[in-house]
Amino acid sequence: MDIWLGSETLPIHGFLIRAIIVYVYIFLIVKVVGQRSMGSIDALDFIFGVVIGDILGEPLTDGSLALQGPITAAATIAGLHLTLSMIALKTPRFRRVIEDEPIILARNGVILHQQLRKVKVTLESFMMDMRLNGASDLSEVDYAVLEMNGQISVIKKSAYDSATPNDLNKQTPNKGYPSVIIEDGQIIHANLKNLGTIEWLRELIHKEGYKNPKEIFLMTIDESGKVYISPTDTKDQIKSGR
Picture: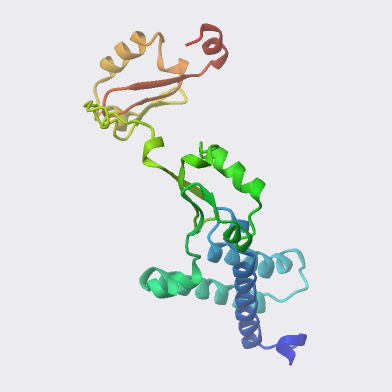
């Protein structure tokens, strides 16, 4: 009973058991509330942050409290969190228990209102997500899915997908990963050496209308050769319309 009611002489193993009880209790609450309320935070990470903060917060501010109990409990929570994360990575069946499955909220432009009630999403909130996904016209929607991170993704019907160069039979070079050449007025030499020389960079800067790297806050170049520049003085940029 000391584990449940508390005691000034609670042994170390009592803190360990209480830590496990609290972890499981918060996990069950999170599962009941649903993934929508979690936003983009993973359920296990949320529980870990809440419990660790609560366990170690009070001993940090109250010098009269002993540390061995809270430290033992925190270590137990950290070990339990790491173990569950590893099991979830290696065991798909267990992962389905820890992580919520994607839930279909709309199909062929039809809102599945029973699913909305199930995941506690209001119609207003659902419509807002549709607009944020560029799908204000629900007739264009093939599927709307509540993902495990709490975000709603939209799959449009093929007829309403944006045309790509491939659809138009046009060949376009891949942009690739953009390399940062200048950051906050400083040349990133490690990236520059893969693209060209200092002289080449100076000519490129002059061509873009700048005198020296100090006038550039950020400059990137992708694999197709496209240059992006954000100047240090944004007021001049706005005035010139660059």
